[in-house]
Amino acid sequence: MKRLILGLVVVLCLFALVPSVMAQGKTVTVWCWDPNFNGFSMKQAAAVYNKLHADVTINIVDIPQDIDAKIQAGLQAGGAGLPDLALFQDYNIEQYIANYPGAFVDLKAAGVDYSKFAAYKVGPMTDKGKIYGIPFDTGSTGYWLRTDMLKTAGLNPDSYKKNLTWTQLIQLGETVKAKTGKPIMAYDDTSFDILRMMVQSTGTQFFNKDGSLNIRTQAVRQALTVLNSLNSKGLLFHAEGWNNWVSAFNNGDTAGFLQALWIIGTLKSKPENAGKWMVIPTPLLEGVPGAKNASNNGGSSWYVFASSPNKALAVDFLKSAWASSTPDALQFYNIILKGAGAMGTYLPSRSGSNYTAPDEYFYKSQAVFKDFAAWMEKVPVLMYTSNYVTMRTAVNNATLKMYKGDLKSADDVIAAAEQEYKQTVGQ
Image (tube, rainbow, N blue to C red):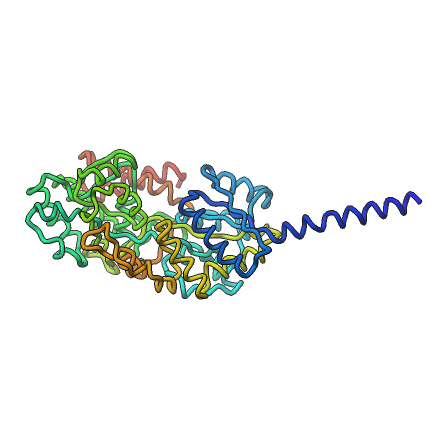
């Protein structure tokens, strides 16, 4: 009798577990940060999916800080505590793929058509024929110019709506500085971004495929030479940190800066500057084979954890909303562009009305999203590797020494950066 009762208890317990298991199977948990950008975009994607799958809950969890630490702890614990999918910054995903083999689902094998995404986004998420992510936003870059300052300098802003070289930008900067006293570029001394954007516009990588450092290149030398020239001519407005850098261009201390399209929201926080800004293609780094008037800064992508019990559902969700050309999916990309300034890298999405609409905030209502969408296609494939952060710190430290006059040439900067890098990584 006891055995019969025990058996009934076990059966009842199993039946009690069924609803929770089924509920778990109908929920996809997502980790990301920035609810106004990434979270907003994922909510719109969930709305698309729920039109066809109303019984599925997309649970979006905001991780405002230390998301990398939480993910690493989960990966080291074999997936314990991790969500079904998460957002990763493009510059550090190669480190995860290398350090945690098999941690992510191969989405190429799951049928995602990567020919429909901007090619440069696919590079970092690819390893040994497998592709692990769904590309999200672009960090396509341009050079932002204050048209009112160009006019004060006696120049016609329309004459600069074209591809420029860095030599031509320096010449423009000298004219503007002479007439207005304003430097042509806001420069954050704590950031490696400007040099990186310049080098990456040529398709040159900072590392070789075997992971070894690769900064003795013509692209790095030329970029450092250009920056040294800008600095020596007084064309850089040196700012310390993000907030001071933003203040430099938002408050009119400088006539321009180089940055990605996601800076648009920051510009629009100053409505009094409406009609004064325009953006042109990233200047060309001369003398370097493969150089283009296009680069990238920033951007993230979505990854499904192989440890997820709901990975099939998570993959289906990403494919249906983020990698689909259905009217609802394309409209989703159109919505997040206007609602959050998030430009996806799914190429068919550029048919949306918000991609081509004029923007009255900019000089002569420039259709800035249309321009960035075109430049995005030209961005060379990027590669970061696991020691990217160490490298950028070493190069930036050496570059600052060049500005102070402690290092005289590009080769001196490269040598100093190499030395610091090797001391840090132990090579």
